[in-house]
Length: 343
Image 1: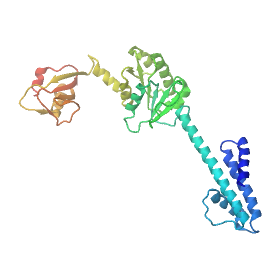
Image 2: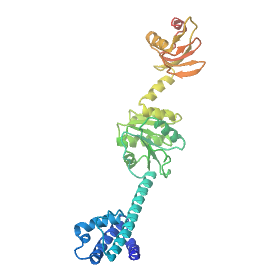
Image 3: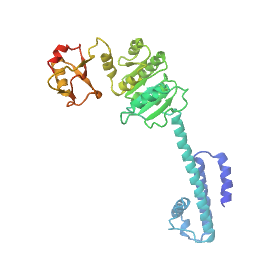
């Protein structure tokens, strides 16, 4: 009987593919074994009753074997053996198809050809080996951040498969179907890091069509392209390409690049300065200096440098010794003579 089943299986395999094959084998074994069991068992046997045999078939084929019903004749037991072998073959085929299906889905995801089921995520459009890995690593510092990495067709598979937070999409980054697969319409932030400024502008146009309200961050080589990008999307935040860390900073905290630009631009509304603490009779805490700077000069302390090194935003009870350096933000450099009074 097993030999007959294997020969039949080879014949059926040629004509049936996928999930139809294990279903066809299970149905064939069920019908043939039921008929053979009816012939083998004594008349009136409970096992061949329609409301009983399906249960016997399931528990026997699955090799569970509760033993509540069983054949009593030698021929019936041979049919039971046929059911066991048929069940094992069916389960083997079933699990093989399941493994194949899962592997196919995983392979399609690695190749970036399936639509992503993401929401409130960050979409990174553009891939540069090494650079993009650093950007993604900084984005993933925030717990729970999900990344949709989109690359051109010359990147055949997900370059960061070990990153569980990173999903992959591949294709022409200016096409609407890539925007759909990456879930741009459901994203909270889109980072455009094109291979050149023209491509970045073209991708930004596609993003604006897909989701004009998304927080859009773009890296450019020439800051003169800023106005062109703002013509596409007035709220776009533009970052210089050679400062990739600002891409992740802006993606996590919208508007932060504007703060950086103000701090880094001479003559801006908030310039950064430093001063050396003058000598005096007592050592004040960092909190005392912070309060005095804000109250008397409208300035904000950022950091403190002592012999132990630089500390950004130290605790308020940190002592500020004579000769230490304070870094602050103010409209203009403060007069050292007025600072002596604070000491």
